Length: 193
Image (cartoon, rainbow, N blue to C red; front, side, top):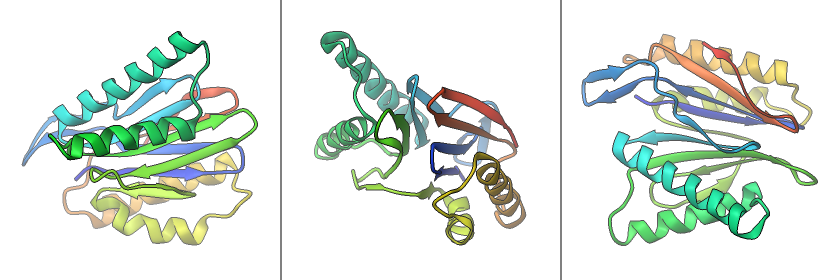
């Protein structure tokens, strides 16, 4: 029932997630923030088993911050994505984390980047990405609407259309969604849908 979507624009990345925490058929809470800040210019949107999701995201966030403290330089979004993929692959051979991720960021010089990763440590750099049942309905629509010079307003309208589609077509659609954006100015919450 979880829903994550990401859109990479010309100079930003926008990420949307549902805000519900559920266990089987029971909703535990409606205000869960599944978009975790890694640093000022990087986010990780997570879905999956609550314990795995929280533990793995905190592990990645702590290690990225430790690297920055030790070496006095922050990792690029690509480096964070590759480190995350490596840790997911290591865990896959011992005790796998049941979590899917979107890693989004903005790097000076390189610009915006969006990475999709699943619980099997498969990773791809994407222009549009999604995970969860809701993404089955929305990815084709986003693929049709996306273009290289996409503005933030256009991307936010795409997110709104995606949420409307999920609420209309998914039997057990989450009740609330939040949208965050990353650009040269950092990370900020755009709103709740």
